[in-house]
Length: 292
Image 1 (cartoon, rainbow, N blue to C red):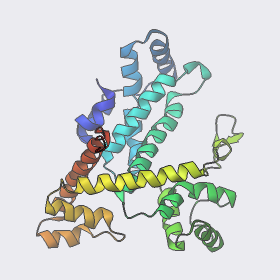
Image 2: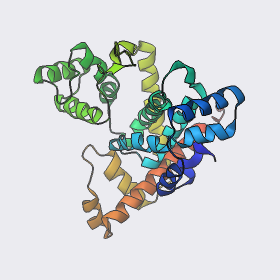
Image 3: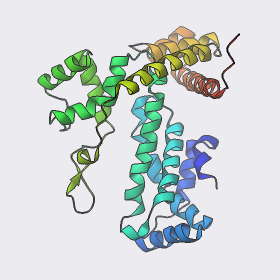
């Protein structure tokens, strides 16, 4: 079974059925399989170890649907993280595989979300992207890590520092809070360490800011070229649903095209996938030599 491709090559219903095929493991069974894979590279042991945690990937992936990305893609990225966890897992350290794999799965999905952020909403400004990447750190600096909305004073301070509207800070905070656990929650069995103390300073350097600006310009060029690959209706739906600051509803577009809301949703998913593939293909294509 090719676990890494299952999110792309199968429907979600088939993935769910595949996950149900593997029974949950006891701690001893899990340790035995993990040792068999680590010491003997037994593929059957890997298959059972990973397969028994496929439902765990689906559960985590569902928590990231608020970013507007296809659930199948989120599951596929989570599967990559699960395989990476299986490769690095040491059963002799005393942790259960699910506890260890959770961080790899989330990291893989979050990295995909961040890579896709500018495609999900290309209207996002550089300042708003800076907010996306730095809000958690800035909240920590202000001791504002509790769940729920931040105080008006913290919102105003962060908005002023990053040069964005206060409403953007409020909306971004709510968006991130929907999927992020508290950073001051204890980690590990002893409970003496929290996530915040393990985080590196993510303040971007000048070189990183320049690289981000260049990357954004590159993505915009790729986006423009990829949009030309869509037919007029697909282009209109993507522009209305993904590129506007206030996206059109499925109901509005269903009236505009005289089709059902479900049909509009299907067209949006198909157009988005065509757009993503066109951008990836253009990004991987070798650059043409400059004219003499």
